[in-house]
Image (cartoon, rainbow, N blue to C red; front, side, top):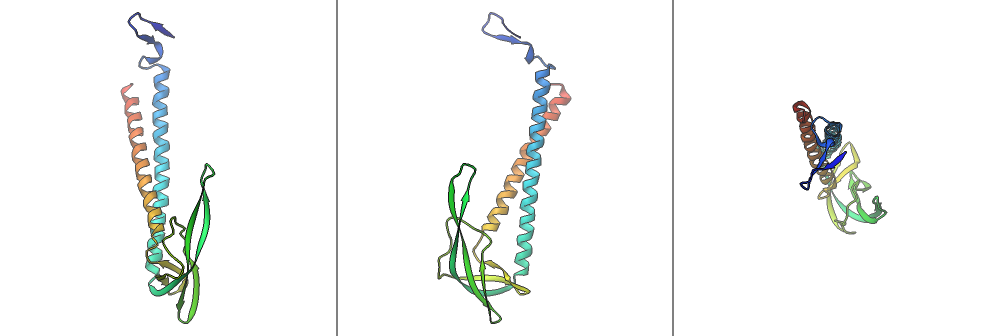
Length: 173
């Protein structure tokens, strides 16, 4: 219950230390911290798995071939608000051991970095020439970098909230 003290202040029983409102605020801080930490750890794990897969693929793709961009695949990405944006991926053609391969980059980007007719270098897996990386196509690197940075920030912020929530709980504030 709020009471007027005559000095332009309200006295509220809810603001006294140890009252239920204080305990629920501590729980909220702790809960927010745990959620942020969990989300951060998930982002970090996804980023690190993507990084390890990219490094594994790069290590396997030891063959080199000149390729020609024969087409640009266009796809539409729609965000939560229904806004559509166009993203692009190059489709390249290259020859390995007398056999011609036509492959699309697994990464769609905007704006398009490639043009039809452009010559690019591809690194392919000699054991499976369908697996390739287009030189200069850094979409995967951008993806895992964003996930690792955002995961680290969320985990750090969450840890701070958890620390503050536990500290306040011990101090009885």
